[in-house]
Structures are given as C-alpha cells and as structure tokens.
Amino acid sequence: MIRICAVEDVPKGTAISADVDGTQIALVHGEDEQFYAVFDECSHAAVALSEGEVEGCTLECWLHGSRFDLRTGEPTGLPATEPVPVYPVEVRDGDIYVSLTPSNGVTR
Image (cartoon, rainbow, N blue to C red; front, side):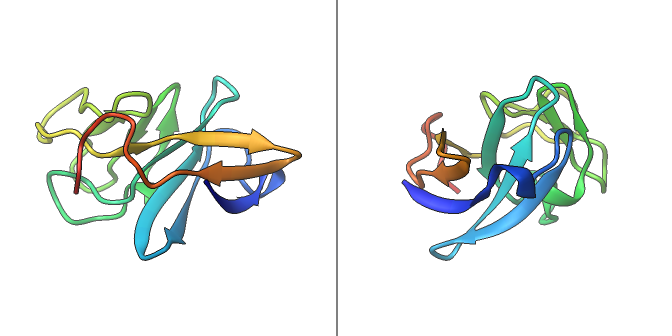
C-alpha cells in the first residue's frame, strides 16, 4: 500500500488525481463516506475521470456522461462499455493508502 494523502485532502463528494508510481488514479471520497480509487481515465475516451462529478457511489466522465461504479469499475451508462480498474483503499491514522493491484481484475 502506498500513502496518497491525508483524509482531509479529499472532501466528501469530490475526486482528486494522483500519480502513484506512474499510474494515474482518481481518488474519490464517495457520498457514502467511503474512499475509492479507480484508474483516472475513462474507458471510452482518454479523459480524466477525476475531473468528473461524484454522485453516490459513481463517478461521471465529464466528456460524454458515462458513469462508473466506484466499487466495481463497471460503467452504469453509455457510451462506455468497458470497466475501469479499481484499486484497494485503506484509511490508516488519518491517511489514505492505495494498492496498485486492481481489486476487480481489470488492467489498463
């Protein structure tokens, strides 16, 4: 697990982009109070998901409106049809840690 930032650096309902050993991830503080990490690129178009809107447990791509389930990486609406990698997240002592081994088996 690699330390990304402090919990307070990611307000609820927002996403930030982080470079983790050369992998761009979107670190999201979901509206369910949980933290999620997904590959920071839409599977439909090469744009940063971290610039999209968080709604519940989904992250919306700002370009074409595809939404991705933060728990599974699966798209919940077109035009995206392929999932994005989802990475395990741990919160320890007020800090957020991420593993670069996808929990959903999807590779980029």
